[in-house]
Length: 509
Image (cartoon, rainbow, N blue to C red; front, side, top):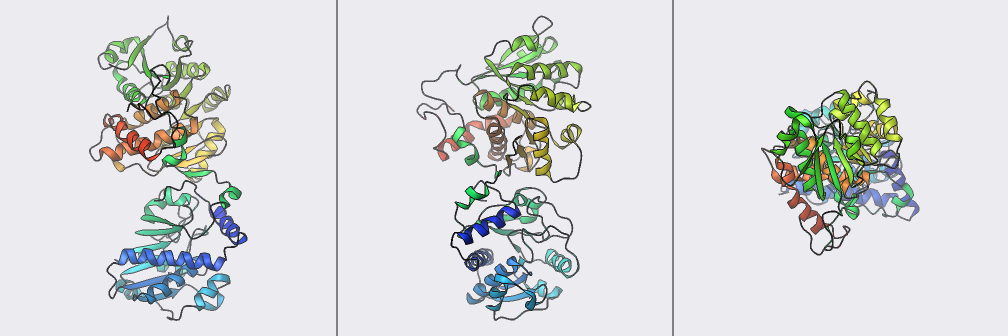
């Protein structure tokens, strides 16, 4: 997938097309270039080309026009091409009509055997603009394509998929490959859309980049270029007191491992100092496991509120292994009153399931203090209104409601800020779904916040690095492995992103 960061909704993509035309790029040219990109993608799939049969399913709109262009080019290059049109040729309009009239290879009435004979099926039925369930002949064509043995190349998005949400409301093409244009859409990254798209490629079709200044998109593909310009980098004249002091609040004696995982993550990702704040009954357990990470004992004489009187403690992770207790609730409120940057995970969220507004009010009392909430779907549904809205919309709403950056974890993690910015992550391998991995993620975000990284970027970077570490380790991953891959990931980040802030001399990763 492309490193271009902006994700465009269907309406925004339509605006981009219109802006390109206003800038002097003919709409027919855009269609011709898009169709050529589809044909080139088909050739990459079909090598070698000798005698290969291509079945192209064209719809009544512009995606059908792209399909007719691809048909013409592939036929010129020696492929055996059959085109099936959904609907009547005489009902085509605009550019699609002009392009269809340039096709002189006839139209095919398809049947199951037509699909069985194809070496490649190109789905140019419906693109990003579809928001209704497909029925009738369209649904029958989708079913035939999905049961055929040939690979399927979708134009823009697989037919039946909502490009804005990644959801389907009826039958949808399951593609092995998707070719889209100018920018990815949210549905390419959100599930189930990502799975339906298969391998997604992005083509430049000549839309000027300047149109983004007019559109002002606020949804992004979570890749390093989203946040690399504010990624903390050690300076050669720095020392261990300049990159923050993170605190991770431990649970009781039998529930300490989660906090230590978070603390290890915060330390590895670059926080200068990390302290585990431990209840008295867990001090010896934590002490037996901690070396570079420090330990502070909490008691009636030294509460968490007392600890944060020292403003050098500038970032805190609370929730992993904390317990769903009144003590945890009190600790969360102490943290939020402290003014330190806060990452609330797991039990720090569950403890407010019956009183979410108490949590939100506490967050909003200090609106300039960075706060990140990191729920999974179950925790999210307990804190926020359970509804069937699309994931991106739900997370944005939750961020506005809470006043915090919300990280809704999953294979397509979404990071949303209260003002509306959102990033969709796509680099998490399946083996990241392992016990304790979320605790490490909380530590990554906390460690980046300790170093002064802006809150939405810190959350987005933590999520991406979490996935990158898991991918770098590979199969059989356990949570303890994730922090140990940070040096490799950071080396590659700093090598590939020279715009990262800081004096690069004397980096120590």
